[in-house]
Length: 214
Length: 261
Ligand SMILES: Nc1ncnc2c1ncn2[C@@H]1O[C@H](COP(=O)(O)OP(=O)(O)OP(=O)(O)O)[C@@H](O)[C@H]1O
Ligand SMILES: [Mg+2]
Image (tube, rainbow over all chains, first blue to last red):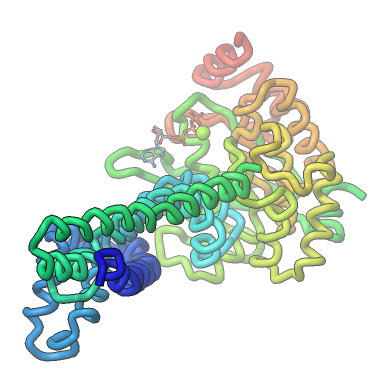
C-alpha cells in the first residue's frame, strides 16, 4: 500500500471525531454559557470552575484519563468513544467561553428594551441576544473548528485509527526515507480540510453582517 | 385617526400612575431618596434637572428596569411594592401598561423596522403575524416612515430610528409612555421630527413622563414640570410658572445653565 492510501484510510475517522466532538460542543456549550453569565453566584462559579478545569489540562491528559482511568463503564475497550467524549467535553468548555463573550458583547440596551417591552427572558435570549451574539462569534467558532480538526490527531495516542495513527503505522512499516512521506501528506491534508471551514466562515460572516446591518 | 387611536385601535383608556416614597441605592450610594410623584391620567410630566440627579434611575424604577429598594407603584388597579417580592403577573401587567423610549433607541439591529414593531406584539399580546404587521405598518405610516418598513435600523438615521422605537412601544397599546432624553442623541433638526411625534401623542391624551433638556417642549407641551436634583424632587408645578419664577435656588441655577447654552 502506498503512503497516500494509508493516510486516506484514516480520513473518515478524523472527520467523524471532529464533527462528533464539534456537534457535542456546539449544543452542550449553550447551557454552560448561560451558566457562566448567570446571576446565581453558585451556578456561575461552578460553571467557571468546570470551564477552567477542562481548559487548564492538556487534551491528551483528558484522553488518557478517559481511556485508562475509567476502569468500569463504556470506555474501557472503546477508544473511539473515549476520544469523542473527551474532545466533545473540551469543545463544550471552549465554545461556552466563546458564546459567553459573544453574549456579553451585545449592548446592554438590547436587554433593557426587551424587558421594557415585556418580552420573556427566553424570548429575549433566543430572539434578541443569540442572533446578535452569533454574528459576533461565528469567526471564533470557525477558528475553533479548525483547531479541533488538528487536535483530533491526539486521539492517535489512544489507538484511534485516524489519519495520524495511520501515518505512524505506515512509517513504522517503512523505516526508510519513504517513512516521512505520510507525515508530509497528512500535513497537507489537514490544511486542505480546513479550507472549506475558512470559506464557510467567511461567507457566513458576510451573510450575517448583511442580515444584522443591511 | 390620531396616533393613539391607531396605537390602541380605539381611544386609550386613560391611566395615571402614582409613585410613593421610592428609594434606590447602589451599594452605599443613595440615588433616589424617598421620591413621590402622582401623574394624572392624560397629562404630560416633564422631568428636568442636572446630570446625575437621578432622573434616568427614577424613570427606570417606574417600569422596574431598576428595582427600587422601597416604595409603592400604583397603576391600573395594581399596587406593586418593589421592596417586597414582585409576582410575575404584576410585573407583566406593569410592563404592558407602560411603554418606554430610550435615548439610544435600542432597536433590534437584526430585525427590519417592521419586524421590530411586529415581533413584540406577537410575543407579548399574542397577536397573529398578519394583525401585528398591519398594526406595525399603520404606526410606521403615522410616524412618517412607511417606506422604511423593510429596512434594518442600521440603514435609518437617528431620528428615524427613534420614531420607529416610539412606534414599537405604541404597538403594545400602553396607557403610559416614558421617555428618557429621547432627542439627546440627535441633531437639533432631527430631534424636531421626534418631538413632533411626541407632541401629537400628548395631544391625543397619552399619559407621558419625559426626561428632557428640551425646555421649549417642556414649557409648551407638559402639564407639570418636575425638577430633580441630588436624588430628590426639589420643585414641581406649572411649567411656565416654574420657568419664569423658580422657587428654589438650585432650580434657578439649573435653568440659567440650560437656557444660556
Ligand atoms: N448601575 C449603576 N450603578 C451605580 N451607580 C449608578 C448606576 N446607574 C446610575 N448610577 C448613579 O446614580 C446617579 C444618578 O444617575 P442617573 O443616570 O439616574 O442620573 P440622570 O439624572 O439621569 O443624569 P443624566 O442627566 O446625566 O442622564 C449617578 O450618580 C450615577 O452615577
Ligand atoms: Mg439620564
